[in-house]
Image (cartoon, rainbow, N blue to C red; front, side, top):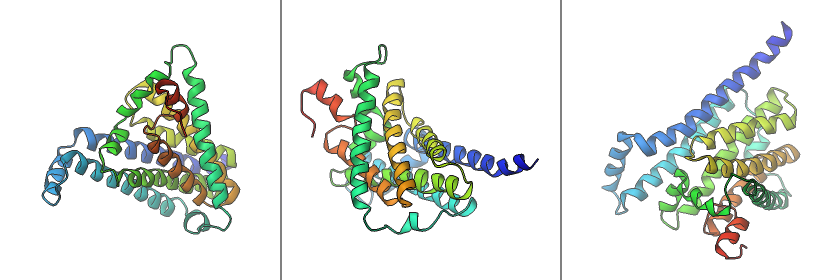
Amino acid sequence: MHSLTSLAPLGVFLAAATAASLLWGRTLWYLAEHSPALRRVVFFLMGFTRRPPTQVKSMLLAFVYCGLGLLAAGLFAIGLGRPGSQGIIRPGPGLFVLAILGAAGEISLTNLLVDLVCRIPGVGGPQRLAEMNDVPWIQGVRQLPAGLAPLAAALGGMTEELFFRGVLQRILTDRLLVPALVAILIAGIFFYFEQLLQVQTAFQAIVIGCSCVAISAIGGLLVVLTGSIWPALFAHASFVLFFMTQGSEAPATLRHKTTGVASR
């Protein structure tokens, strides 16, 4: 009986995190593809801007995506136990170097994982990486004004990091006393689940999965080792910006194999 009672908070947490990840990922998909209300809002906002409807829609969806993530983070922090404040709001000294190393690690590990996966017979070679441009959120980012696209992409990544590592993982380790490596794994599974709801093909799911493994593993370790969310926030934002500046969200080393353009 005591063991069941002690597992009850974890069960509630897992159910709530599943629901939040589902709603977050699927709400964006529904608004982008099937919501007549969003279309009406887009046309209304077009009366205040000269931008085309695709840009207005993408800006609105980016705002909604970040807003939903921040709302979920706040609700979890209030309802399931606020994690230690230093990891959320106060960057510690000397974390910048770790943040840079984390960003480099996420980029390199993603490239390695996708490279290895593309070598598996039946998965498809690097030539299929063009499919990544059809992922809805990547399409949306590409439709944003040039000056706004990097900011929106970075803020989206930071919002994800705040929720999955800064709140979910910290609740698991600080409140539910789950071992750190298990907490990293659980938070990473929820992160991938939320991302999986926004892809359209199995190959997209595989590539996104490789990036989720890299971001979750390295970001999670940064949170555990430093006690701060800031290095993980910086690493995730840098990860997104790196692939955007490469001209594709697909891993740069693989794009080099298909285009002949050396990656930086």
